[in-house]
Image 1 (cartoon, chains in turn green, orange):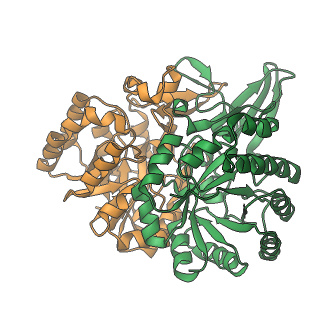
Image 2 (image 1 turned 45 degrees about the horizontal axis):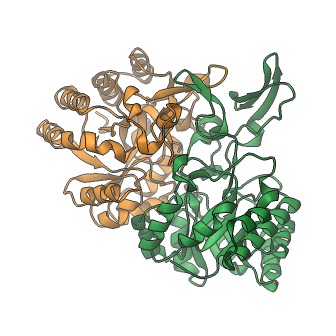
Length: 332
Length: 299
């Protein structure tokens, strides 16, 4: 769609991380309100209306944009809470609202025409026809792409549509199509779509047993660790299971996404914006990751080669287990 | 009589054309079902196998007096898959929309929203009703209370509850049947055909938990929502959906028919279902706004 400079979109779980991300070079930050209207509804995170207004002033003062995620699905008989969140975001001067629910998109399109609408990854729009529906119905200007598409598929999609696309490059990796995954509510009663949480911390337990430490979610054993082995968080789709006579990380290894090495490929595929996941992360982490990706994107924009980008991003690759996810077709 | 209609949802699994033909022949002749969904919903790669079987199956069902709905793919990706949706959208029959992809082509003509389409509130439902939604089968994680609230606010459409079968919980771009056999999706060898009800996924402590079916993840347990008909009708829910498995689906349909016609009570119906050769135990937690794996008896 575009051959312009790619935008770096960074997470802001708190006012402090918003400032950190802006100062580290984010072109835009995304954040949400302190309630179930956004998909990262964790205790201690997110913004009040006043904090958002202040955050917008700060970001705009530094030449950055603020995108507000109102991207859970509105609860029946309580759609007004979601509409009100959109109204507050608009009043605060947000540059865009990121939404997935038809009711929320419709409300913003009808009442806040000056605010750009971005289609959340939670809407799982992955075909020209689905994207066309959102563009024609609500004037959506940008689509955040599901994390299950390959770079080739993204390139083909961009050739067929007339709106911007945004792709995740770093952080958590959902291996299921987002917005259409009920694994968390099946096990725990709390879900991304309804409650803004996946595999919620209050349902997690670590039990030391004779055969190691069991990491459990809502009583289901998601993984087990030898004494001394680092213990991971029992996210459902990154768990170890038994199926077909095998024990394996059936859905995905406990890895996170790092597509830093594919920035140039994503640019060639026509992606407008690159998104870093992690609104639950602290200031130090956000600063470090945003700085590295700022440099890497600038290097790509100036025609830098792959080894230069790898050197810039090297710190992000140390130690942690990472993947380029679905961007490479063999992942499937 | 309660006036509650029975719907047979689409087969989620990779059944051979012969198995599909035999299955629907029995449904046509013996099952007290009002509406039958046909078509591939989960994986477009399976369509070349089943596509040739559908015309005869549809004819057979319609001759038996069943209303046939053509179900569309839940996660279309390729040009061929998108074309298949466009073709189905042009059909005069009712179609089931399982991805927003179909909305543009079908807008203005009647459709069913399937459980893969996110309809979580009355405002979204009304938007879709204005564009042709006639029946709404909301996502499986919604409770009866929530669906009832939506139904009350949208009297122009029928609301349908997912009542029987493994719960469809997630879709991915990755094929788990291929992955477990050391293959990639592009060369999957259709290993999902070996598991006609899905492949059980247990925890490390042998707890029954999930099941895989190609790119789809389901519950290991089977939803068995056995409502009091008066409770459904008072909330404005007019249909219940049964999802096909290899167990005796005619018996399942007869059990639900007896339940909605008040010839069998809720506990009796659940007991009859539990006696069938099922791939998992019976649950209904979602209906009561609990975790989906829970069963009413333990709540």
